[in-house]
Length: 172
Image 1 (cartoon, rainbow, N blue to C red):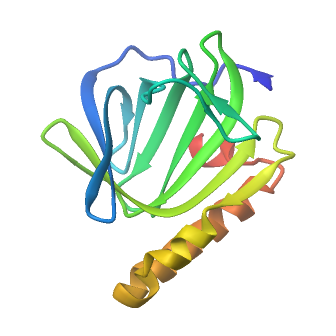
Image 2 (cartoon, rainbow, N blue to C red; image 1 turned 45 degrees about the vertical axis):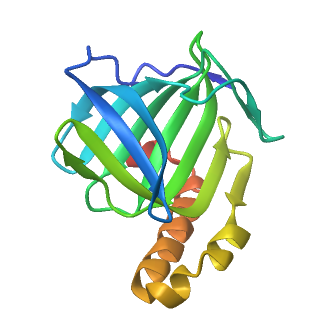
């Protein structure tokens, strides 16, 4: 784990938003977040760990007190979430492959397409996740174009994570 870089967004929140994550047509989770930036394409928010209790994936634990700095794009098929401990130590990046975000009426709507990527804070661990769930989702049959875009998004995130600049280059 690395210490919080000085380039991390620190501007005071400008708006309260609700992140609405859907999967297979159903709302998976809704949670409040504080907007920290919006350049017209990428909108960034800060939110505490929104689920109950601890979620231990084996390679990382999400737990009460963790802070997520989440980056959603209106034109890209993914979201990148910086995961920080409550005392400012970066755990890593959790990336969701999603349809492009829709921001309206104080909400950020994103549709989870099952594919995920985890990158440890030091960049040495890059894990592609949930490819089996994606295959079982039927998206390749029901919406082949979206399925192809999702796979390309995961490949692009994986490729970027393995460069010397890592995922930080997407967030600069």
